[in-house]
Length: 549
Image 1 (cartoon, helix red, strand yellow):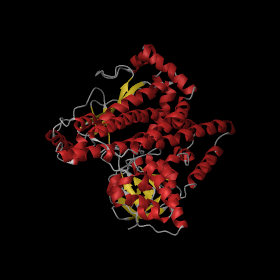
Image 2: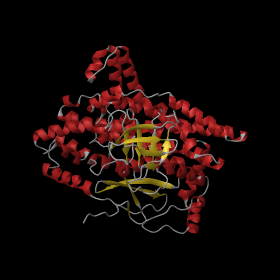
Image 3: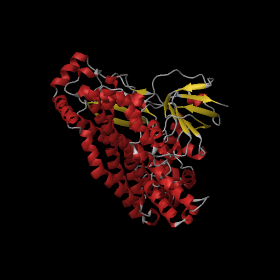
Image 4: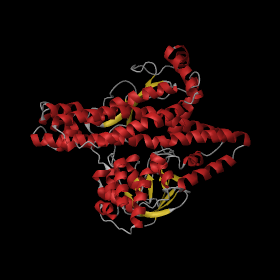
């Protein structure tokens, strides 16, 4: 019987949005350290009543738990509210956090973090990612490859911690907007529409591809390969080179080192160029229209505050989709190249039996193998790989450890209740509202729509981004459980998207707004009720998916 023992005290919730059960050893190590390190800094900046969030892997599945500010390693049950009320006002750590929560809100810490992102972190990430990505790993000696891999992984660890730190900042102003909107009686879906056009990083790849296509149209070229694009004109070659330099080294079929980059998918890049006809200016116009519509529903005295809240939310909204590609997907792609090169050499020397086995060694172990070739032995890595591949067939529990409920927000001191209400409001929009399970026979399924125009197309039911890249054709409607930024390239050439999971702040909703892509999200039973290859119609205004034939 498989052991599903909780990896520590507290309640651990299953995360299925980011990794398959066969996730590599290096990525398991990275996530187990970076999430806690980054969020602990972010929570302290925000004055949050939590210490951090921990990530641990059990049989290949990622589980996370909220770490209390006090007693994080205790196995005792949560004390009664009256005791919590007293503790949160007397314990030194809570008293410091209560003061920090007031400073954080009054000083708008998220704006300071965003300014530092623009001034310092983003330029550093772009420069380091480019520099490390340009290293010709195949030409390095074993010693230099080991040195390069070590440098890449240190960069990836720093970037991953920053990734999680920034998530406290990019959510805060959106949550404040939604709380105020609720108090004013505004509809959350319509309020989120005011943010359309505020995430340029989401549409940046599509814009770059549209420029390539425009140049090909100018010279009347119909390329069949990327080499045809390069030979069409010097400008087309330069535009393609710039696109691949910026986006080509990012993992794009998932977040793991085992997932491929765009450079490894030339047919996808070509198809994306040929399908790049999205009206990329429509999103900003849609956001402006939504803002005017919402503002007109408010009393004159509330409009200035609404305008300020929307402006701050728009400023940080784009950071959510800009963060991941620079801090996670690009460093992972660079690390992938170095790890694969190490694997090829170690397989050739007999240090490992199969290239896949390199993903079962930690980065320090790979560096050690390159330097002296002594440990771990090939048999040990094969055993690890066999175990990892076996995890895929296991049914993982949704929760490990005892059940728990968060304490009432209103017992918290200082400005913490205000902060936590915003956090709870915004995190509720990552998931769909509760719905009834489809019996698989209904002709029409319902969810939350994003967009204004209906669309018909062929349903392409896929399990992940990798499968979408392999099977989807331009104009297909992608049907999947959930999308993440690694779906961006395939969604840029899709006709629409349907997801079982996700809410108004999910990745699917964000990219749908930015690309003007019709989407129905949170469709319970979509994967069982929509046949692959069926013709379907999406009506985002009504929030429906209809089987046509």
